Amino acid sequence: MSWDEDDPFYASSKLFTRTWAACLILPELLAVLATVFRLRLRQKRGLLWWDDLFALTAMIMALPVFGSTYVLLANVQLSPFANRCIGLSVMVSFYSAVMSTRASWVFSIVRTIPTQSSTFRFLSALTYFFAPFLAGNLVPIMASCLKNQTWHFEYPYVCIPPLSASTFAFISSVLTDFILTFTALKLYWSIKFTKTVRRLVLIGFTARSIMIPTVVIALINRHVRQLTKYNLVTHQYLLLHFGLLFSLFACNGLIIITFIYQKRHSNDLESSNQISTLSRIPSSPSTSVELVDYKAREIRSMAARFRPRAYSELSFQGTLTDVSMDLSEVPSQESG
Image (cartoon, rainbow, N blue to C red; front, side, top):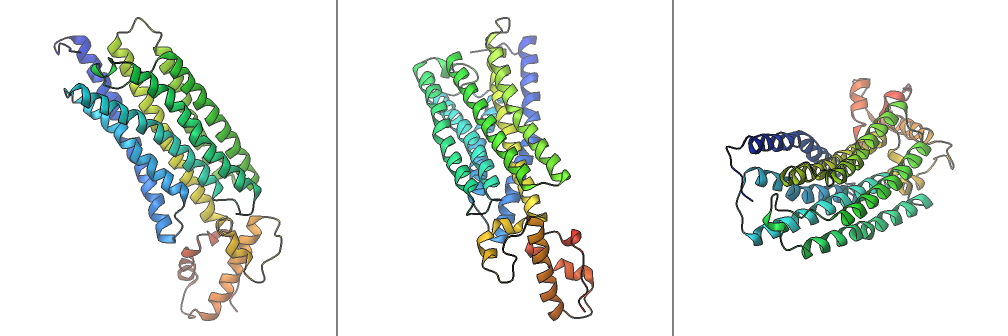
């Protein structure tokens, strides 16, 4: 498809596309930094787990999707074979990234649950359930795109699936988000968040839910016949990018929220098996805060017997950073 660069419509559409693509840069960098931040912290503490690996996979899979945007903005003329390869890679990467973000989300929640809990097994099974569920979402779209022999010749060189496949993808996305959101909210509230962390969780879920309206708008745009084909596919293509963007952003945001919660209140939930073997721990503490307070007192008692008297309370508190808990809320005890 060729366009006259002197055409005002072409110039305005190109400016619109560049503006939307520029809006993707900063949030995407934030999502990348959140993932790197998570991986480095977990690597230093020796606690890398599946949620970290899925988050990294999501970021890797998102690179072809966002990279294709800048290829399109450069208006590079490619062969039909190259266009088809780009379209298929973008499509597979997009759905793989969405699936990985949801899996990372669930595993980050699972991390806060004791291993012996039945909820742990339930959420683990739930995670593996969504893998074939979303794979089934991808199959009809890929099949419909492969049957279309002309899609790869047109801007933006990606497959725009038919309405039936788009509707099926939308229903799958809504069901997945609804079940994950309901499960996570129920689990988080049972752990008894503080007000600050509770608000952060709500912000994360709000950002995550923005992905659903983007799909709705994309479906509506398919029926707006007043728009030219150029504008139609541009809008839908960029809306899919924004859907993936918010998915990545909210996923990594919830991972950071989980880390903050563990750091401040429940490091013991993450290593419940090790804690259960320690001596003199209350057999059945009523709350996780009691368990944290107990461990804090034990650490203070042990450190007080060995630290020099010249050490200040501030420097002593700095030695407890490896414990991953905030002792500022725990009443200090006299070392005697």
